Length: 291
Image 1 (tube, rainbow, N blue to C red):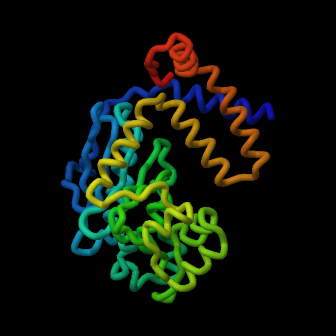
Image 2: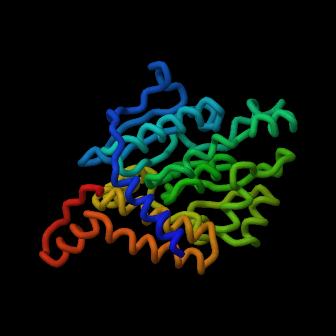
Image 3: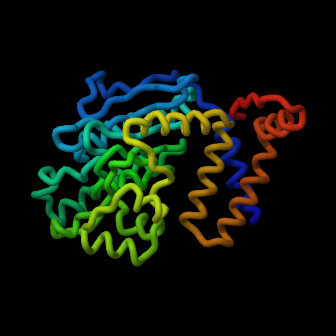
């Protein structure tokens, strides 16, 4: 218990000590133009970053180049103190219609093992800041897995979800059999993975895979509204809360309760907790400083 408390307090103190760096917008390594994604900063306070997967002719299939650019953008936005939330969406008819099959076709087992294939595709799941998936169309295979790596999924009413890898003689490899099962339960996950069937946005919402379904033409605006609401709170506390929710997702109830309680206690070492409670008592808006 004591070691858990020390670890949480250490994490809070590390977050309070903001690193000394220059904020920048992600462009690309060696100043090369982005090939597979588009990025922009939006919202009234410019606190929301939008990453748009941009391979419409390939239905935004996830190739290594695209995922490298996504990882790079997340890396930059995670370090940028002006950005509180990241949204990932797609252009055209798809969010992402899976991994790039042509790129994978000639992979070998030894090559996958030695190269740890797909290991660096999980950068989205490791992002400390909240990530919202705005699923505008097909989210199949790797696309569905990418959406599940995000913290919240909003779906357009034309979105489709599925894990069709079984039809290709393989299985999901970036979390499809694991995250999907935790979200929708064994029976439904087994059905989707063993049949490759697609489900609608409405079905996904009923299963708990999706938080909200909205008309496609208002999807991004709704995701931005959600992101701006999250951005209005203490970035430090938001990150601590995200970590606590993810702990519930990944550990036992008792361990999760212990982690939550100690993280709650740890917030009493922050200026933002004092400011939030003082603002409530004094009936005024809180001014958070992420400390």
